[in-house]
Length: 141
Image (cartoon, rainbow, N blue to C red):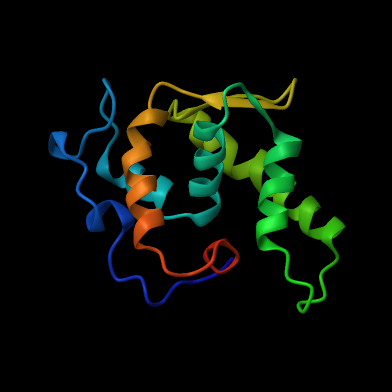
């Protein structure tokens, strides 16, 4: 996991949410919003899911993230990187996003689709992308 010591404010603090810090029809606590958007890998998953016209396979998410994160100078084979990403998505990131109805995750079919709150994160993700001067590989954990 990469620690970003230069981050002084959470993404949601840098970019106001409107609606008094509430996303979607049902409110999400500010702490939950911060927890979601303060992780680079979760933000990239949300970007991929929101950009797709249909449910995205976990395999496709893993491939997209691995291609963005892969650095041949580090010495980690791409196969190991993909395994690590797959484990982190299936055990941590996707269940957390599904718990808050940000994505719909079907582990049996390995499919991910936008949930009720997903579209509310679009503006945060767009503003974060515009403000980031680092390449994607440097921003991902």
